[in-house]
Amino acid sequence: MLEEKKTKIKKMIKDAFVIAALKSIPDLKRQPLMLMMIGLISAVPLFFLMIFGGEISYGFIGAMISTVGFIGIVSAIQDITWDRYIKVREMIVAMPVHPLSYMLGAAMAPLIFSAPGIVFFLAIALGFGFLPLQSLGWTIVALLMCWAVLSSIGFVISTYLKKTSAYTLSNVSNILGLGLIFIPPVYYPEEMLGGISWIAVLFPTSNAAGLIRAYSGLSSLTLEIIMIRWLVLLAMMIVSILLVVFKAKWRET
Image 1 (cartoon, rainbow, N blue to C red):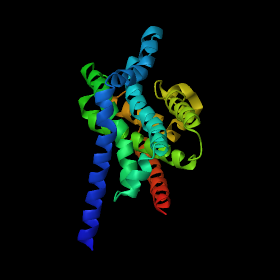
Image 2 (tube, one colour; image 1 turned 90 degrees about the horizontal axis):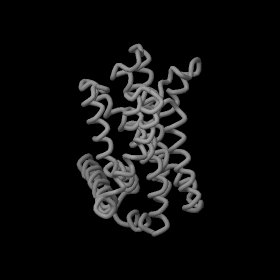
Image 3 (cartoon, rainbow, N blue to C red; image 1 turned 30 degrees about the vertical axis):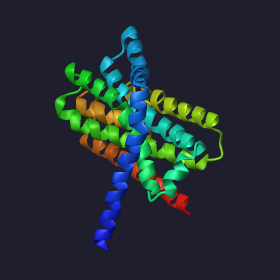
């Protein structure tokens, strides 16, 4: 029984990577300029920071969060919605492929697509000393957790709004993506919010940005506050994944 479960889990993971490759590699070959566009969208606020004298180091951290966050929630909604309309999703789930494998593969595909942009901003931040080398591991963990939360949220939204038109879902995903990136303190220090700076913890994007800034020395947070922020981000990820698991099981019936 245990061996059978291990085999099933291995197959689910393998299927997820196969689906991610099928959904990302053709786009990389067909639309390589999209990589540049994703990077440019994330880098736009950097130009405003340079022009108006903002802290450029905050901009690079914001660009990394923006890359994983925007493509996480937007692609999870738009890509899965598109699959529904062209019946790809039904075909995959009808095969001996678990819906969780499909969801994970669909979520990893845009992450693969945006990986060059993330590496680019990381390299610049490390090269100019905005991000110390010893904080690289924590930075990657925070980025991945932020991506996991927003991808899961996007998947749940796409299942709840399954009867909504693709045009409406596209607008919803763009508004959510931009709202979660530019309204919370992602590109700017949360201290600017004054007495309500605690609200940054409630958004996965600004929470992850605050953690990265703490490890890079841009903000001074106590060890207790850092632990609380990690726990909040972890709780968000667990809750969002549990929602996905619930929806995936529901889709099998």
